Image (cartoon, rainbow, N blue to C red):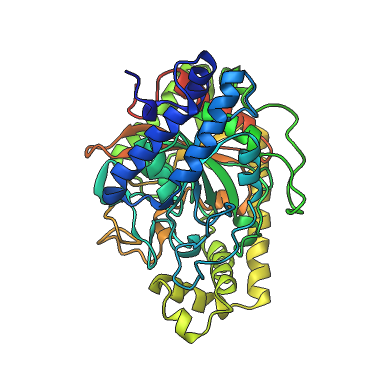
Length: 463
């Protein structure tokens, strides 16, 4: 019998269409899986079985009539607990958030999924206010890696990544301000896309400003394209949202990579020390891209690590998101968040604008890079998942999570589309990710290249 928790959204929809199984079957399977894995990995803040099954029954009736309401009708979806979901509190991993807060409105991405008939099965875990690249919080504890529960799932969309990897829904909504869909997706062995800024509207606005993106986290690139077709449309509540895409992302998947110019940067010009097992898995994937017809050459983008500028913007956002808290509430915060919010509060407007200058120059340099190359490929991360409950690997000498994520946050600064594809494992069986980056607005090209690797069978374990 088919295990519905192992199917992509595309395959679920095909099964609904043929009458092989129903949305109610798929939703029950996802909820059962979520309940079973929750004690070990802690992917969920809460599950929504009653609401989910009611929506699934309605969807099943629409499919029986041959009248699905949208392209994701009946597909189980999870929502990161930073994003508004009508009828469910958004606690953001913080003991400072009142549980009875606003529950009467959907975020734009959630609203579009609801209109398309998606079934919301639960809210997933996040570090407090999504501030770091691993998922643990004072409010909801530690989220663990599906491949080894002693390791981190990554973050800040760690619960979302773990849920998809374990079959608790094939689709998840995450947010990414410095790598927060790509980091956990790479650690957990799934696909994730940080779209071009504004492609997916965001409301309420993030305290981290235009670093913050909403993106799909899925089993493969085809599901992400289908999801982006739904959520990547304008919403009046986000003044920075882009116009609708000129065509369907799902329909544009099939072009392959033949003739594309790919710049492969294994270490950003020697700036990043990449573990040998990670470097080897990424190189094999790059060789497969060349075998599929891409013109590949080693090429490093012309920039030095912009971490100081990123910290200025990020720490300022942390100060902003916590500025209304009194001393007693601040004492409840994650200690690391307290540290960076204090650092952010000491920054001046001139400091912030100097960081913006760095950001603009970085964007210029990447624009010039993409005059020569259609795509940049790098490791998503230089390491695989480390011990759960720590911000940085033990013995690394690093202070903040940005020390081990140098491939991700530069492309939040530039607002470019960037995806992670699982391309193998290290010697401990932990997933390795390949990052694919394109110029702004070329989300379809990123998805197309990732889909080519899936079609060639080169994902989640090598060739």
